[in-house]
Amino acid sequence: MDKTYYENILYRIIQGRLRLPFLDPVLYLHEPDNDILEESYDVYKKAYEESYFNGTYIKDELKEVLFYNDMWSPDDDDKAKKAEEEVERLKVLAYENYYNIPLLRDLKRGIRFQESNFRKYKSKIHSLDHISCEGVASLSKSIWIISKTIKDKNKNTIDNKNIPLTRVMEFYNSKAIEVSEYRYIARNEPFRGMWSIGKKQSRIFDKPSIALTKDQLSLCQYASMYDNVQESHESPHEDVIDDDDCLDGWFIVQKREYEKNRNKKDIENMIGNSKVANSQEVYLMAKDQHTAKKIHDMNSVVGKDIIATRNQEIDNAGSIKFTQLSDVKQDISIQQTQQVLQKTRGR
Image (cartoon, rainbow, N blue to C red; front, top):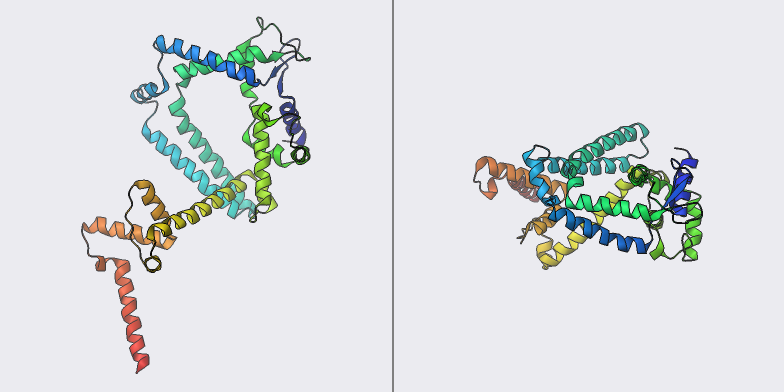
């Protein structure tokens, strides 16, 4: 996309409205203000209650319908989680190899493929949401908001009896702003300059933050995100900042490092005794799975490999002495060899 494409989106966000070119005369769909949003929840509640008393399913009940009609299973959620984890792994690799253009291109293809897999499996659980009480209520709320926010060029509210509200809603949904578009606009001119000056004046879009539309708020959040990245003492290369996949990889690495340090501190507090903490191996009892995961994550890559190998040996043998574990036997052998060498040198 060229710059004019993004500038068009930017000025739509600034104006807080979407032009409806298929209407004659041309009208505009404005973002709802706080008064309309507050009242829209009454519309939602009324539509939900009517649907519920008419026997419409709620979302949780639809799980059984989906399962027994082979439209969804817990396995789909597992596949979605695995695809999400694979996306994370590939984004970290993209960050670590941002300078390798051919490899980066292949990694991006892998990321897009896994993102597609994630959407495919994740969407199954939501495939009947539109016929649930929540879905019916959300649709009623959206159409009501649209009926209150269609205005002419002078911002005058008009009679919408002859306006196809459903078509307007479909057009609005088709023009939803993508995350990648917010991010491009937030880190580039002309918005970057607007943001820098607006921050100094504590006023963005010429209104207080509480009055920002959802699109304006999202754009400000991404602009603030890029500020934090550039101000970080470990700020990545400019090429990384300009690449969404690579920057996401950098975020993942930073998050993992932060969690590792935090977990290390928590574990050190659990150990307490400095002599124990400096031991070659420390065994801790976990009170729940969350704590067990934190303890396991504290291990190095080598440590995790040793744990996996030991678990496999125990599974294969059913029961095994500690001194018979392969890594323990290897350590004992090394210690014996060192003792022999020390005695030899002593002689």
